[in-house]
Length: 76
Image (cartoon, rainbow, N blue to C red; front, side):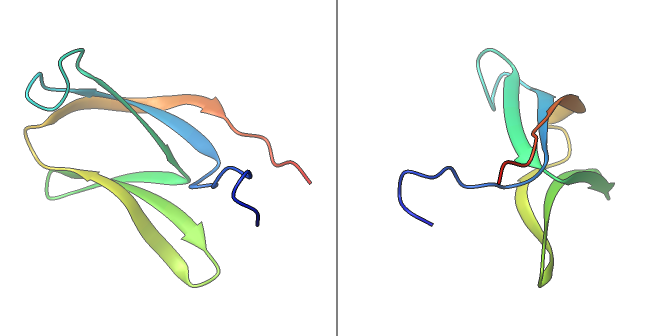
């Protein structure tokens, strides 16, 4: 991979509504294959050959909702 190629962190782009102490506009976007909630922690996972890897995590009380905003197509 050359430096000009984008890094792929997952197939989906996720919208996360967060509290103002995280982002003034209360929005964050994350690229990941999957989202999970464990003990109130919002986890975004990337599936690799070695298994699932955490891309991003939001602590309990810092996030309000999340959903997929778009699907990233695979390009050859």
